[in-house]
Length: 146
Image (cartoon, rainbow, N blue to C red; front, side):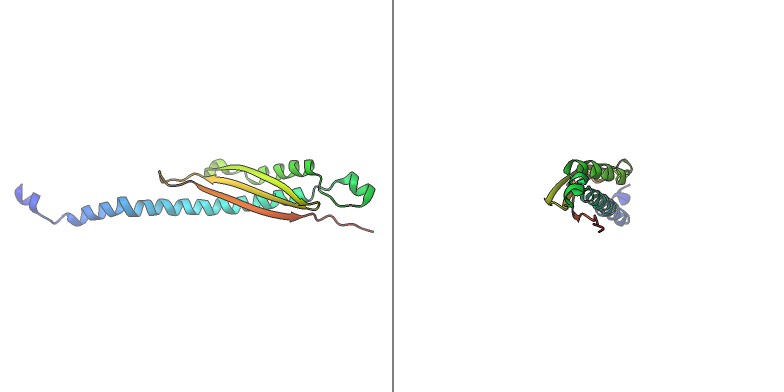
């Protein structure tokens, strides 16, 4: 029994186990989190682009008919953008991220500026939350035919 306790033949296994637990498993989990973050970023960018263009295309038709002036109608723009944003992001429960919101403002009568934010849940406990913020600016594409 004493020779078994004094033997150093199994030391490599203990070091390998410690290295596996404290280095390799957290790195593997982090690579999964980063991959999910990039996936969510791509989807959030697509949804924000679609919503912002939809908002920019919300022409105030009565004003356009009476004066030929192109202007975004804010109420219609918000409704169209929200509908487009929600329709584009339909996999949030599968990938485990939370969409915090879509904010729209109009820096000029024919431009819409949209900001979308989301938080991605992490696998490794005690790591900071991964939060994404995506910004898009779109211009109205209405053509006047004479």
